[in-house]
Amino acid sequence: MTDIALLLFDGVTALDAIGPYEVLWRIPGARVRFVAAEPGPCRTDNGLLQLVATTGFADVTAADVLVVPGGFGTRRLVDDEPTLRWIRDLHAKTMWTTSVCTGALLLGAAGLLDGRDAATHWRARELLAKYGARPVDDRVVERGRLITCAGVSAGIDMALTLAARLADEMTARAIQLAIEYDPQPPYDSGSLASAGPAVLERLEEMTRQ
Amino acid sequence: MTDIALLLFDGVTALDAIGPYEVLWRIPGARVRFVAAEPGPCRTDNGLLQLVATTGFADVTAADVLVVPGGFGTRRLVDDEPTLRWIRDLHAKTMWTTSVCTGALLLGAAGLLDGRDAATHWRARELLAKYGARPVDDRVVERGRLITCAGVSAGIDMALTLAARLADEMTARAIQLAIEYDPQPPYDSGSLASAGPAVLERLEEMTRQ
Image (cartoon, rainbow over all chains, first blue to last red; front, side):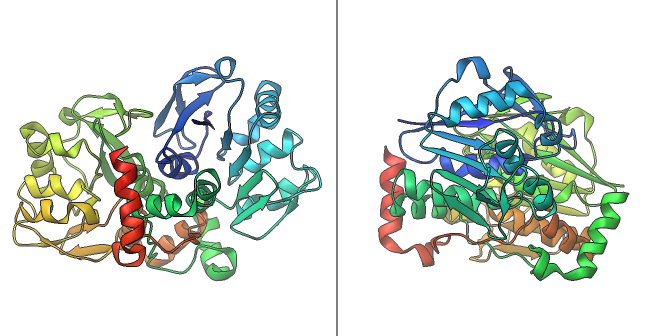
């Protein structure tokens, strides 16, 4: 069995967690557990949705895979020693330790990224560098048994990469077909480079509202 | 304000719901409500995760946008008159009625797709035709104020299309940048045509396990 622990917390971005989950649970023999400091509902970044953690830190002392999603809640957790200790303790035993988006800040704050290449949300690259990481402008960054990736939706790409490592390429491809991941975004504005300054300005305007 | 109702039910596929949600809540002035027959936690298709519906059918009698996700739970709901009535009643008042994946089966069972082009998960096309719809092999199918889309991950593409209709193209592009939706799947197996017979066979083998 492949034991997968997916961290939840108040202020998580839902798609950061659900993208990898929707891929990883489909690996034959995988068990995905949603883990928070204590079991119970966790509110997403906007407070609109609750995702329920079925297990607490105390009950998950080892896993083959750790997935750390991002979200505004990470800003508080970078100073939360119980969370960082849990990440550190799990990482000592994982085959793969992974993050999506600003989940990388938690890996960084836990001391796992010092001097290492890592990806995060484009907005958080400077912040990530404060934890000693070297922010890389790639969608999925695999270095040894650490896999980090870019913002929010990048967790799907990361998880398909991971599925091939945990199982094999045919299994990863079969999962891609199962979730019909044949992306056709109507626009080409998914990266800072492709979006350009006018789109960035519109986003900043929306964020200020 | 744009009032968005997102249906939840036991047996929903999490990404079907979370993909559109992660896009649509970011539209300025949008309010997203997760609605189930009764408020409370809904188990996803594999039972591993619970998404919490904050509102019941009785409290949501109108919305600007209805989003109906898919999942194995739809197989039961196609015969559930309270759910179909709620979909029909809401559709009478929406600006846009949408589905992701096998959510189209519920729109079909509610009588909304008779004689109309519609998309669904590739596996459910024949089933969709039983409800009088004409299954179309496109990722996002917009016909009048009905938008249906392909399986699971296609909800992200659908929601970006919808965001441009509800707001404008710049806003949709800004949301695409916010969720860093610059997809780079490691493989090209996201559609039946691109996956080929060996991948399909692997998926069938995994599904039988």
